[in-house]
Image 1 (cartoon, rainbow, N blue to C red):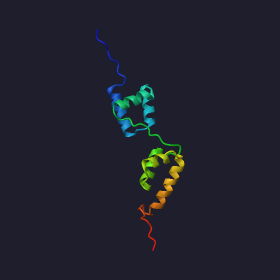
Image 2 (cartoon, rainbow, N blue to C red; image 1 turned 135 degrees about the vertical axis):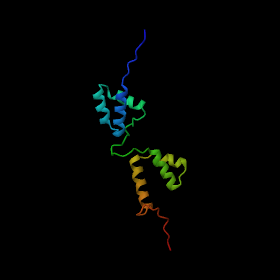
Image 3 (cartoon, rainbow, N blue to C red; image 1 turned 120 degrees about the vertical axis):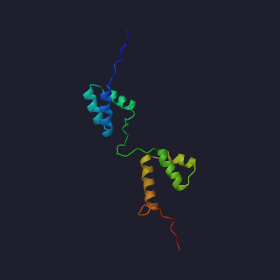
Length: 124
């Protein structure tokens, strides 16, 4: 007796799904095909992942920005001010919002109107 293997997706469904998702990689496309094929959203995502085309939804903060870790902000401070690793670690313990505000202000003071770095001011 030969065992038959049930395939979750036909070759035609796979081509249709991959083609549509490649053209429009959105959650709506995934949901539409889940309903069309009678599958769960997770099943469609798994199939797209196996096919190597699924793009994970990127996390954004409440403000709609890509999140930045405090350690990354501390590293920027370290580079701007020539801080040691220990000093940068100490800064990383500060409030993230405050760090971002200070860093943005310092950058605005050290960057010219065209985005050029201002050199140290010379006093006669």
